Length: 75
Image (cartoon, rainbow, N blue to C red; front, side, top):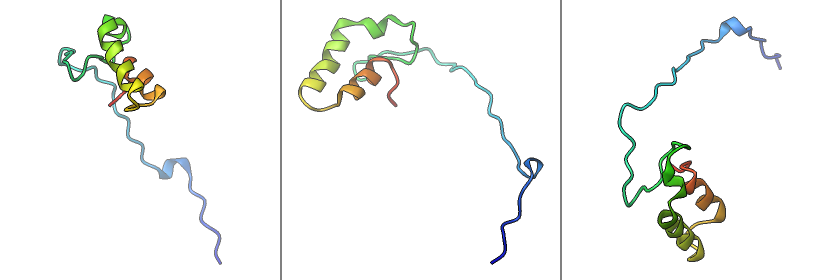
């Protein structure tokens, strides 16, 4: 069995994607009360946090899911 040929770094093509901020304004809706901006006050909204807590209490989401949702880390 032949040994695999070693490749050099210059044998690979790299693609870099620039980090482009969103051009649309951040929108909070009843279905999406949390955004991904950590400085936004939505992450401290007691009513929205209470809704997520109720989902957790009802067994619909895990504690980790609730935390990610409130931090705006969910897709």
